[in-house]
Amino acid sequence: MALNCGRAGELHPVLAQSFMHLVHMLMLCLSSLCYSNSNDLQEILWK
Image (cartoon, rainbow, N blue to C red; front, side):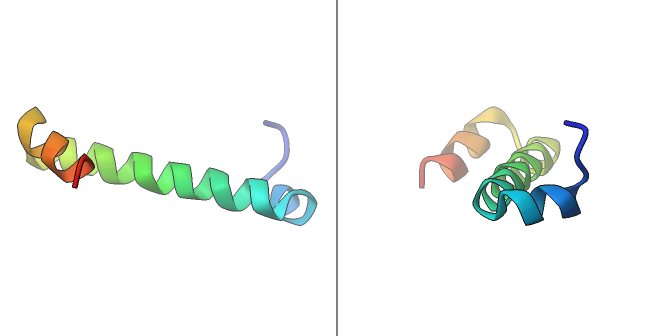
């Protein structure tokens, strides 16, 4: 995507917010993988 976060936020605030939420969730999943095994991660995701 050629647009930076600022421009994307101005043009599509809802889309940008959803994208940032997805990124945030992805980072949480990645950080969880670093500190727990797959079983613990599944328990976190399915709570």
